[in-house]
Image (cartoon, rainbow, N blue to C red; front, side):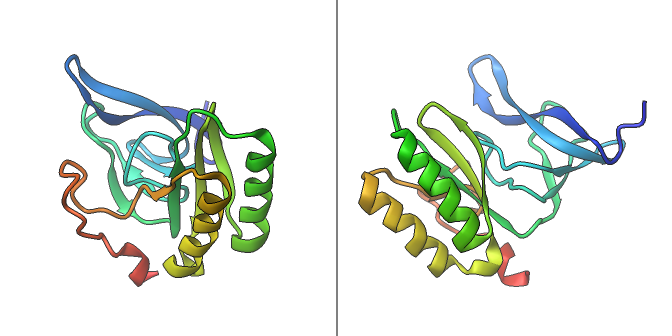
Length: 161
């Protein structure tokens, strides 16, 4: 069966633990043998977002971004978020920013937001959510050195969009 142009699930390396790679399933569209377009931003894997074109030549190594899809991946992690806040956030992200709620697991949310909105507007939007709920948010695909939490060097891919 030809799986080009249809949604399939692949595993990408999300990190490492004492036993080796930790994987996250991603919904993608296959482009060729080892290249894929991400259809929904991941909830664990950093540095990836909806629309990115990635290559996976070594299944035990992180995916390589070949081309950015123009979306910021926003992560929100909480023990619990009231359903009404999730529903309102999903609706407001869609209407105000043209984005979408890509995934949720308990109090963990993953959203895709087009970079064309600008970082300042996106930050204002999610800071309002934080002020309402007390729950922090962060950009999951903007930092260059993912292995060093003190290094805040930005990738700046959105400046090229």
